[in-house]
Length: 181
Image (tube, rainbow, N blue to C red; front, top):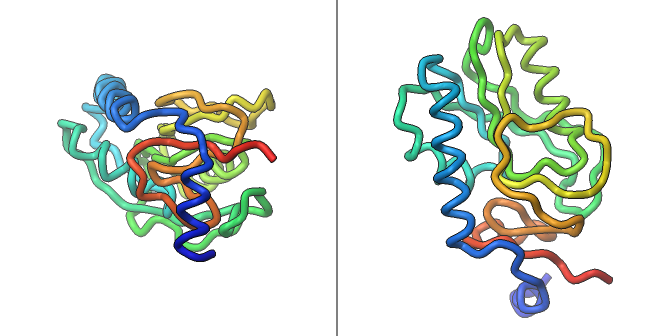
């Protein structure tokens, strides 16, 4: 994709959550998470690459001690349709006996987050919590529900705030949806 095509993709998209809305949501999530996990000394795991923007904004707002690490698992590989779960990096920190908070950009079909939860339990986590910036309102019965949800997004392909469109635009401060074809 050329830079012009990438700009046209954004120009033709619809903003579904402004940058101000996203910041308010992250503030609310920080407060909710602190209320549940402040006494746990949790291990916080960001799901790369989508959660990097969300984690980078949320972590400074969590005013309690925590350890941070990441994992990398994907189903999309730069496409707009999910495939099989592919594990790229497991957490480097020991999760056994720990309260673990997984941060992700979106809960879409729930397959990836459910696989992460199951893997962390297999690795001995005492409790697995999940926080997602967005939850897609797609009408599906999902195999997992997030413990902390930022905002609902429409059943369209969304990007910005860590979510990409064809590998691009994760860096946007607002959330956009591709136009329906």
